[in-house]
Image 1: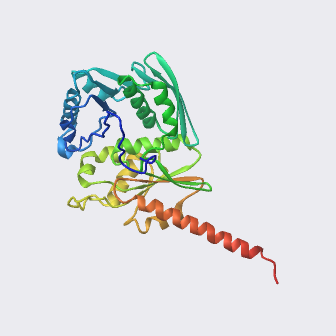
Image 2: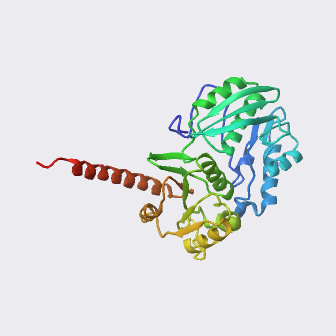
Image 3: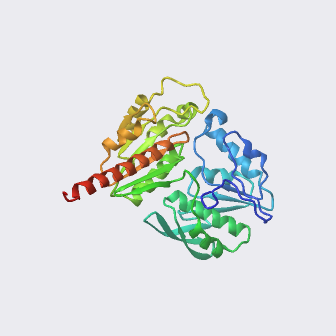
Length: 332
């Protein structure tokens, strides 16, 4: 959490907030008073087998919610809605579509910020958050719905959103240079990739969008290959790195060249395969047309490319200034 420069905070409240992980089914060990379900996407199928198995696991998660508690469910996600319909729990829904209990209207994004009005059952509160993208608006609504379920002050919760800085590796702005922005995001499955690229393109549609992509795990790529290939339609150019194996046995089929070709066809975008993070920065600098956004995406070490780009561009800018200064010095 960027506000705290830490992944955790110890407070004095009786409330305990935790992120539940479906990747290995460990979230079924929880018996939450409040359970939050933000989305269900075909991921971790190496563990769950198929989408039906994953959905069944999420239904069990909701059913583990304490009887006097509540499930906070994203109404905009069809599978979340379906799973929660079949679960035997109290439910509070949120979203942008009509029909939910907590809903956002009048959404406006500008300069990396988003403002909207939240209708929390019968109350209306104005919200401002220093984040962009529909997915972040939905996350804010989940917070307000949780506050309502806990009988907390929703107006105070809405005001607190303005001071929230986000979490590391989630559309983080790495560098703000003339006509060039560098972002980094942990997105490692198709839905997350699409969400962050859409947010950037809609917020800065005058900029060309360059993506440096590093797939996380061969097992994930095998089970989501088509969806992953279709996730880059908002980009103007994608640089594809080798898969980050994360301890898995490598599959020689899924080379940067093979994945680049698939992304190029499915997303109708220019792609360049690159062999390593070391030479990616140089290739990007040769190809970019400003104004531009560069974003590094993936759960591996792709973030190092953004830092390298920042260093190179700042050094280049300083060098050009020095040359320009020398050229303007009068002869003695």
